[in-house]
Length: 376
Image (cartoon, rainbow, N blue to C red; front, side):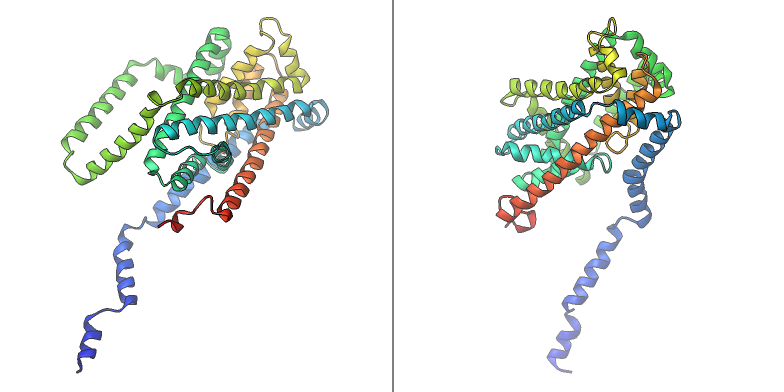
């Protein structure tokens, strides 16, 4: 036996090494059943909720009457104005996110890139919840060469601002239309359950105990490798989240937040002028030119987004429809209103998403947006 034969037997070739590496990596691969379950939860579950709630809504209305209302009574010029306002709300959101990103250490990007990141994100959210949030964080992190956890931290700050805005609007609606707000919550078992849960002191005790367990567990296992990784990620997320309290441009951030939510509100309110039955709310005594019913419909529509669905389809429509019935609007009329507003808002997002995809592809060709794989 020659030295060459011995070497060939003792040193594995590249194919063998590749096979061995893949075999070793195989145990870490997610099992098929877990992958299927994850896919079902992320895609099938939201679609199921949307389909079920739309079917439930449609079962309570006269479809033919609804078609006549939309085709004969709707003034689509007001709907077109709503679509324009919707575009501006996303632009304002993109600029606001840019302030947070710069506060977290990322360099300034153009308003176009900031806007495109939001256009694409909200279009993808029509497919299933949080897909857009994941995409925009990855897009900006790869484009700027930043840590994903840093960008995600700014996204958490973004959502925190939205939560505060919704709670403030909820408080305002509760002050202006307390009886309507309570009637809405008590109409649905979920709303009644939420009222009981929030008023239960054991909820807050449980939250405190859970927080204490997390703190004690973190201290007890602080020397373990997995805990060091978790601690590092959480610290990075917190650092990026907390930057919104000390970043430059806080007055502009607050102004943009107000602009975003005023636009969101106007998207609902301005469509009151598109239908005769909602125009009546504008002249209704005590409605403040329709601002109060618009606020109630808008607030509950905003809260319904918390239910996982495709861009709010289903939960948003049910919430807005029933909100309008509290002010004397018929169920079929309210459903017609909600379907038109949601449908044209979704159409706007689709167009913006296509624009976003086209812009990114064009910039990549010019080399202005370099894929991560092309970086050295």
